[in-house]
Structure formats: C-alpha cells, structure tokens
Image (cartoon, rainbow, N blue to C red; front, side):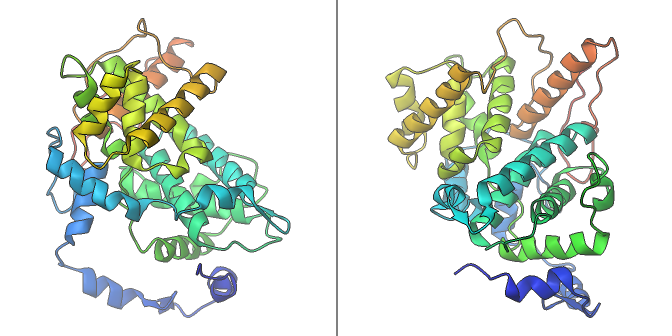
Length: 358
C-alpha cells in the first residue's frame, strides 16, 4: 500500500526538530555511511548511469553480455510500479495525475534548457517523478504539489549528475513565480522522494543499455554518430511521454536503437532479442511501433543524414552529451555565436570522459 499523505503532512507542512527529518537522524546517518563500502547494487547502478563510486568507474568499455544481463535483473527496481500508466488515466476527485505529471515534466524541461543540464539529468528527473507518482498517493486540493515535486526531482537529479548543481531556490527563477518554495520545504520534499524510492537514485534507464544495443544492431559493428544522436533525441522524447512508462528500460533502448538505425526487418529484431535473452520480442516490437507512430505524427523529429556531426562519444552517457552539444551547436549557429556546452567539462565528481563539441 502506498504511503498516505497524512503520515507525511507534518514533514511537508509543519516545523520539526532539527535533529530528525522523516525519522532519520542526520548525524547518525552521516556517521553510519562515512567510510562505508558502497553496496554492490549501488556500484552496478552507478556504473550504469555513468556515475563514479569512489573512483571505481573511470572508463567506459563496451558492456559485456553478462554485465547487461545484470543490469536487466536490476532494472525493475528502478521502474514505476505495475499499473502506473492506468493510474495516470484515472482521476481522484479534483486530482488529475496525468496533468500533474505533464506540468512537472514541462517545468523540468524548461529548467533543463535554461541551465543546459546534461540530458541524463532530464532522464533521471522523470524517472524519479514516475516512480514517486506510481507509489505515493498525492493529496487533493494542492495546486502547488506538481511544482514542488518537479523541483525536488530535478534538484536530486542535478546533484547526482551535474558538476555544478544550482541551489533549489535558483531552479525556480526560470518561470513565473506563482509558487516559490523555501529551501527547507524543498529539502523535506527531497527526503520524502528519497524515502519513497528507497534511496535508489542511480537509476538503470534506457541510457544504460543504448550503446550496447547500437553496437549489437549495427551492421558495421560500431554505430555511426548519427545513430547515436538520433538515439539521444528518441530517449529524451520518450522520457516525456507517459505511455512509454509501461516498458522496461532495456526494451526502450532496444527499440530506440532499431529506430535510430532505421531498421524494421524481422531478422534485425531477432538479432536484438537474441542479443539479450531477457528481452521480450513482442514488447520490443510494440515499443518500436509506438516510436514509429510518433515519428509519423511529427511528435518526434529524427536528425537527417546530412546533419552536422562532429566527434564520436565513447560511452552511453557520451551519446546523450553529444546530442545535447549538437543541439546547442545548431541553436547557436542561427544567431552566429559559438556553441558551448555547460555540462561537458571534465569533473572528478563523475570521473568520466567528456568532450566539448565546438
């Protein structure tokens, strides 16, 4: 049963003892984690998202079949609960959950664009949002809840992924100040999200699998940068669409790879399914069809073969970073200014190879 609002109302709305929030003693938590070895689950998930854990990840070799199989086993721990798409279609009194999600995602995208955050930050934010909405029963009659939840999810994602994470208050300067939350209120909401998600923040997403499937499905072995760039666009577009929440990240990644390289042949789809024994061919086909429908309707626009593309990213996260830089490059070219990429600087926090595309 999802936690009720009543049990968390005091956390969100009332003053509490500084020594404890949500029953967690801050000093006790800090001392218990200090110097501790991260659990294996955290290490696997961190590697999947491109986040370093105590320096364990510094390079990005192509994932092995065994490694991807381990990720597939973990991916359901980082998904919304079963029945989430149906839950979004229902109304609870005056609460329109689909509208809450839509407003939150729209706000997240505005802030992502304003700060030029890494694409993975957007993917993680929506992952946190969907998982929270699927497990937590939101209160009715709270028009501010969508904004507060969006701020908390993006703030958490930026702390996980970004080199420089703005203060939660600074995230709210992007749009009109209809609702502006104090830092302590956002902190309480962050803690509620963290506890609801069981502190599993290094999520396994489609980003974790995309490079693997691109290599598996490309006839020449190494996928083109165009295919990588298309994959990034598709993953970001799919993250915004609630109907794709029914699919596993591995299924989305396989479908995205097929769409990015323009393949719909049954032999290639068989290759995708056989490359990972955990893949359900029928579900991959259905996801691929849904992607194609959105492309046909114009909801998703893929880059053409004539698009200007520079260097080749060397990691799953590099796929997304490259697309973000390419998009920024295209936007800047229209006004004659040099392209820059806010998130592409080298950082010890993530310990990953990044490339600035100029």
